[in-house]
Every structure is written in structure tokens, then in C-alpha cells.
Length: 320
Image 1 (cartoon, one colour):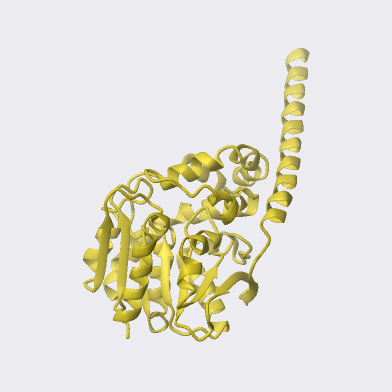
Image 2 (cartoon, rainbow, N blue to C red; image 1 turned 180 degrees about the vertical axis):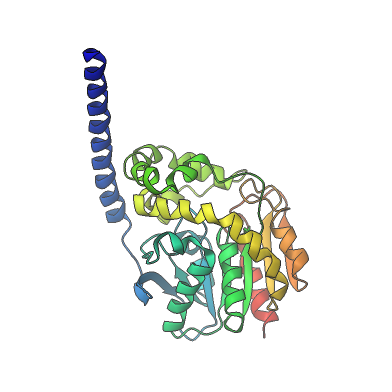
């Protein structure tokens, strides 16, 4: 009986030692990732914290708010379309709460798109920006529509790229289910995610772009590795865990949207199904213009950049 107890103690000691090492690797890795991807904009005060905001373009140009999707930060949309659109718009890019360099003052409560819309609206208002066109990609399809439903008089129009708008069949992936859990999630995110995720970044990016190909310098220029930091990975998992039930309720209100709406999606999107989301919201919003592009997947801002920019211009023209 003594021997099994001793073996158990040895096993526990080994597990603890491994976790301590992995926690140290995670701390060092987080420091290195943040050092390689410093903030490039300014910090704007909101209730309980700050949001990281980058502005490009002329201050007196028409305002355009760009909202990035899950597992990313503001650099994703800046690289794809932000700098080009800055030639004729005042482009405002925001790290969503808990992502990039933005705080998440409400913790898990800020996972709701409606909560993020409130914080981002505070930041936009404090910058003196009135009635922007709001563009949301993927997860932020729910955020852009939540923003427009909450502040209809402060939105000039909507551009939705491969947007999440309705409940979908299936889940959010086992790792997100685990990390969204209160205690086990914290332990997993602070020990295992970064060491394992480092080797999964490139395959993960490739799967999001499939069947198309990501730019060769995508990882470096967007700082996608920021996702592997424990706080951001937890925030991302929380965002995904509440999304289906949120859009289940919000999708009943899309007929309230009265501003111009442009929707662009690929017909072979393996991440956010076009039939479930883009075509569904287009049926509910009479003034929406839906463009489904053949042979394209989820990252239409990269694979159909000219068409996305044209959609922004079309919303601007329709809203005059």
C-alpha cells in the first residue's frame, strides 16, 4: 500500500513540475510576443479601462469604423483594407475588448457583442467621431449589427464581411469550450496554450483562409501570435462561447436596421456558413445588398479586396 502512495506522490510532483515549466515558458513567450508587437495607436478611456485605437486617413474625411473578427486584432483589417481605405476615409481601427492591446474591464461580461458595442461607442464618441460607416468581419458581424441596433442614429451604414449573424449547427471547438471554463480554463491558458499553439498558428491561419492562400507575411504583419497570450486566448474563448445564444436573440431584430447594408461572403466559406448567416440576414433586411463570390472562403477582405472597398463606397453613396 505504501508503494502506490509513493508512486502517486511522484506522479503528482512530476505533473506539478511540468506545469511550472510550461507556465514559465508561457510567461517568457508572452513577453516576447508583446515585445515583437507593440501598440501602434493610442489608448482611449472607456468605463473601467482603455481601448487601443489606431486612426489612419484625413481627420475631416468620412469616418469608417473597422471591427476585426475572432482570434485576431486590428492589424488584420488594417493590412487587408485599412490603409487603402484611408486614402478617402477617416479609418478607425479598434482592438476589441480583451484583444490586442485593449483592456477587458468587465471580464467575462464583455464577451457579449452588446457589451463590446457599448465600450467601442464610448471610444468613438470621445474621439468626436459622428455617424461612421461600421464594417464588421466574421465574429464582428454580430458586433457591427449590435452596434447599429443600439445606436441607429450614430451609424451611417453597415458593411458585413462573412458575418456571424444567426445560430449555427455545431459548436466552437473543444479547446475554446475548455478555456471558457472558470478554473480549468485559466490553468490551460496559462500553461498549455502558448507552447502548443505556437506550432498550430500556421495551420490555423491556413484553415481560416481555405480554400484560398494567406499572404506570405500575414502572421508577422498582423501579430496573430498575440492570440496565444493567456488573457487574450481566454477572452477569445469567452467571446465564442456566448455568441450562438446572443445571435439567436439578436437575429429577431434585424428588420429594425434601416441604414444601407452591404454583405459580402464567399460561397465556400468553411468557417462561417454563408447560407446560415449572410443569406439569412439579407432576407431579413430589405435594403441589404448581398454579394456571394464564387470560389472564395472566409477572408474576403484579402481575397476580394477591391470588391470590399467598392462595398464601402457603395454604402457611403447610398447614405448621402
